[in-house]
Length: 281
Image (cartoon, rainbow, N blue to C red; front, top):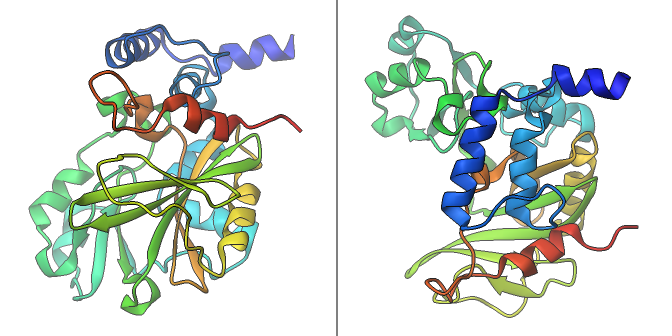
């Protein structure tokens, strides 16, 4: 009975489930299956099962509040400091944006601005947006709109970006994001450090050149992933230290494309999913 009541309370509205179903079929050319061990089906389940309505999922989607969760799990020193939180147009107008700082909305994804080129009108427009309506991801629906100001990570020193995929508390897949002259490359790697490029048209090494803190990053991602069924943990490192940038609960709303007849150069979804799911312990 308690299981049934929990499902009723967390049920995703029919209109949203229908929208996710239609977008999945249109995007991937197949029906979604919650029990299929493929990453896009996993994310589909994340969005339609009610998991993204979990209060902790919602809190850790907020780019301000997630830092409290990271500090609680890993201890202080693993997040980028917060310089200011701007909650309305008057605070945006009054704030002095210092060169070398970055600005982004706490309630949205994929938006960031450098202080040197900040557009106050754009920041105000961010405050008017509810990111839930973009892809019907429920973790965004009730987030209060705010703007966060942060300094350069590692005082402006060079850094590398990593993403770790954690399923049921186990991190088996990582990606490093690298900008090359030919474009942005995503290097898939596992615990063996063997590399598979997401896009085979771009240069990629056979093995990952690991930062000295890589094992600590694997461990931190698993510790952060314990409360969740599935989560992506984004980190940055200067080689010796690392910070957690954000937690992502339904990556790309399950719309990423993988190898197909039209795109034979992309990574295989079955191979990537096989690494994510691994073998149950």
